[in-house]
Image 1 (cartoon, helix red, strand yellow):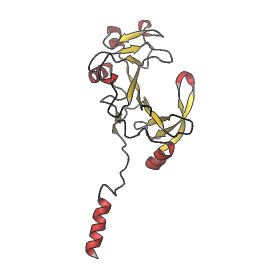
Image 2 (tube, one colour):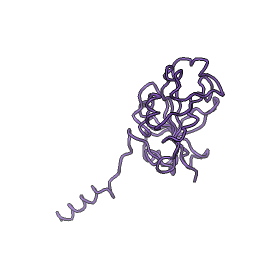
Image 3 (tube, one colour):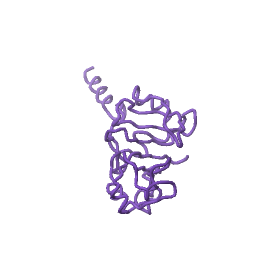
Image 4 (cartoon, helix red, strand yellow):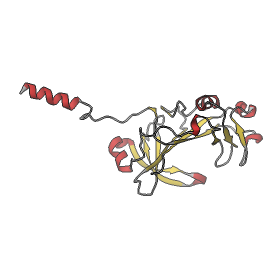
Length: 202
């Protein structure tokens, strides 16, 4: 009886039987902490009360329904979007500036990273769109650097820069693009305020 009990305990402790808690910080990949096959239901099952449905900000002032992970912990917050209104497949996730450094990172970049940080991770300069409009501050061209290629698993990255101050006129508006090593942009010193991880289509 003692031997059988010991064997049962070993089996329960093995990886095949153990329930692994989802990560709460660290590097984001194409499969963790959210995977393309995830649904609203699967995220709620895995994260419990740390996964809630909320209205999330979209383009040009629009809103859409998504799942927020760790909604009450601003440095862990992740927004998850879906491919359809019934939340049957995740389309990607977003990190946003919440006023605190994020505990998550993507290829070494996180909320608050500088132009130099991102350029180093990319391996070469890249282009940033003009600031102070709806699509301002997004990287528009990685110029063949590391971020121009999908991550392992096929997901792609979008990054947006911003600052709590108006950009100079030369860096503002639709149609404006500046290289990350442009002297005026370096002096303006924006930081990463949004990171998107976009899952590949089926």
